Image (cartoon, rainbow, N blue to C red; front, top):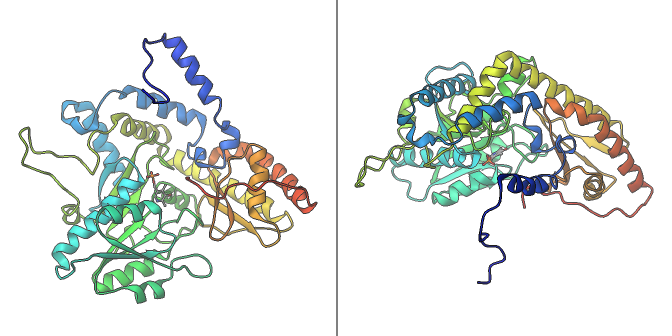
Length: 416
Ligand SMILES: *Cc1c(COP(=O)(O)O)cnc(C)c1O
């Protein structure tokens, strides 16, 4: 056999297995330096402890066959209803389905739009969805799998979705529009109210990708910060995806797809009947799902309560402001005025790739945006511990670049 790795002939002791695993985890970026990346979406360590233990209680249970587990059914009912109440923005009748992640949630939004269009726009044979250029690649993936053409429209100068250009891009095959709240690359909200108004007027579906913002925005708003309109309070919005495993602080994999009504939910369901075993009913696209993720969200909901989530949101926004002020004070750097807890900054004077390279050398996992070149930070409450260190290192790196030191360029891409 010519495979690089294969199953060891005989097993090892638990202690030995764990020791070897620990050697791997020691290779990962430390928590402190991870505080500016997706590691940040953990709240704080005391919360993570609750999340971890809650997951463990349901470690071996499969949420697909929840009918065997009356206790878990109760947990899931509480979680689903609580998510509906959060994402609804106070509107009644919202229904929530649990999924394995934003990818699946966006897939489900596009799928429901397609099935709805078969009934409501029956003349369309080659469905198309129109969205801003910054729409997440997972939405493009979903459309691809579903045979939907995704038309991505250039952004405005300030990198938001452009309602006029989007309206102009609607064709006779368009079944719906989509927008982000906020988008990942720039941390900015698309004008969801304007896009939804266009969709409503033209009789189209409107999907909102609130994967990263969905579990943060409700609490940022309650903490007293302005949040652009994005949820079901906006007339015309029909589906919203929101990731529980981001700012819901749940253990991965857990996300949600939310529909405006039971009527729209009917376009989501695919329940094949013909099978020797039974009618097959799963919540969404994936079959077996870890009950532990749902239990972990239940743990976070009940450990934090509304006050706990609002407190974490407020602290995250304060950390972002400290970083914005600190970065703005460094000559040549330009932090953007982003909407929520993603922060980006660029420079007209120094190559951002060199900042990424320099910061990477100092242990900050490189992450950025390519169009335009930006450094990309993801902030939460515990980012606090890293703010001063980050700014100190950033000042150092920028000084070196300005002094003409040869700094190796780093990556600005996110997942590659
Ligand atoms: C994270 C994210 C996704 C994808 O979510 P996964 O859980 O990684 O599948 C989709 N859209 C946006 C805006 C995101 O931030």
